[in-house]
Length: 630
Ligand code: COA
Image (cartoon, rainbow, N blue to C red; front, side, top):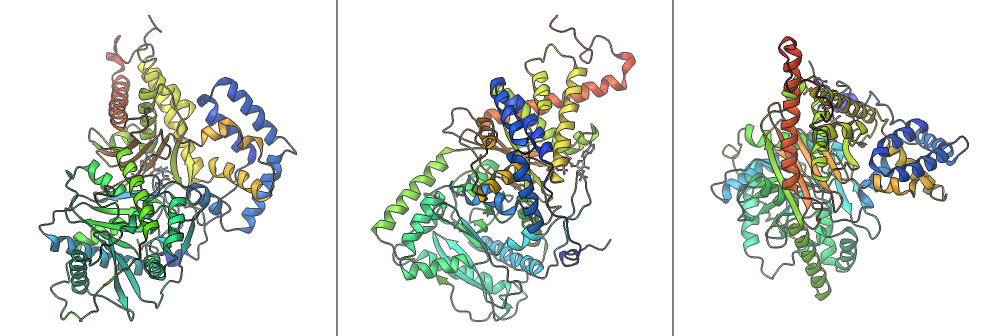
């Protein structure tokens, strides 16, 4: 079948993100929080919610205003969501916000091998950008639940055109959308904490593979001899957003610094040639090195976190991508990374065949002016990234006992099943469930990004209790029934979310529009329940890949977990993160509980199907209901 390109798709307009009915959202909100808060607190919340949703109440008014906003805009929630999720967040980008893709460990015999890899990566980036600009990328179609609908391709346009400027109160995401630009294009190469401009397209002509390679070799040499000591200004971008905004104000007072910043801000992407870290290149260590570069003493300053795509090529073969999250979702990052990996590995090198190499001007080293004030700021940023490095507790593991195929054979959604297993793991560790975030794509709609599947459902709670507190008192039949109910609740929530009927975006919209209208903040949004329901102690995401690589990220709250998973047919890769400074979390403990839980659920499924397929043989075995407590 002929693949549709995004150019063809432009004519078939996608629907706008809907505004769900108010009552539906409020009912769903109460259902989501009832079992997560104390009874007294819930009673209070219920009264507040009912008042908000009453005929003639503020909810009705705000809903009308939101519907008007929907009519007037392409996507009513986009700006609200972008600000709330990213731009207003003051936390440092590494670990807290920027997800990373970790490539398989590469074997480089020497620096030339590493530079060959980097060269092919750059050629791949240029080819991919050409496809985006020409709108020739094949349109993504939804898979899994409600498969087959076309997805909005707009996020791809922001891959190489975005820059996130730090602000004192809020950041600004700038996107240069002039496609097929006749302007020269450049990449910034970071090497030994210095930044170099590599012109890759001049006079509409792209550098050949051998030319890029030779320019990279020159950069490597130039980086060896920095002349004066170069300030490691990349560290400033790893700081909290307000701190970086303040430092940037100081930095830009000098015209040399302004020129250097302008070149970084207008580049296509960064390629970070990293020094060997000296660490064992395990999955966990490679994940850590992508997330924070190993801090000040390793490659933490060899980055520029505001830029949306940073490709890391370590001389020791530790490679991957660091992505500033505000312009696009992980799924787009995966598509791009897979294209590049296939290109690097799969297409023949043109290095030997490219005839003469043009004599090119040497790449330019970016110059900086430092002063004692900036020195002080740099020291403070360095100290803070170091604290983040020491704080991050990461556990990446491959669960190889089974994968998606086993789950599908149970006639269950693999994603819902894994979510229920994550709930079980959390309950095993904490004896309670907490507000959970699972990202659900809403790219079925114009400019759609994501909404939240609140996976800590009441049905999940009932199931996890049956596997723990009530383990010995309940029968397998009852446990299996609860498992099916939990999976069905999760699947239904997923379908609601991907069709624009989840509650988080809607509630945010109601809150933000009340602010736009200068209204007093409605009580529902000041309520303790609302505030705690937005503290996502468990922040999860499915990021599947078809090429060997994995995605990971950090927790979003100090006492929380990040849990990213990549389900494959016969195994699942999990990346669990948490902070060491929290006494409530431990990635290793969570990972252990998760593995145990996955085995216990499998055993339950196996016992249940054995009982179903051999009813005549069933005696007083494990699948039989046991009398409660006796
Ligand atoms: N019985 C048998 N098979 C089933 C099944 C069932 N009851 N339910 C689902 N399946 C199959 C599906 O058909 C699908 O098959 P495929 O592998 O051949 O495509 C597969 O199982 C996976 O489906 P499922 O596990 O239900 O998940 P999904 O692919 O629909 O994903 C979300 C669900 C929420 C993850 C997805 O909709 C989404 O939004 N993804 C984006 C997440 C995101 O944004 N991540 C990045 C954040 S930065």
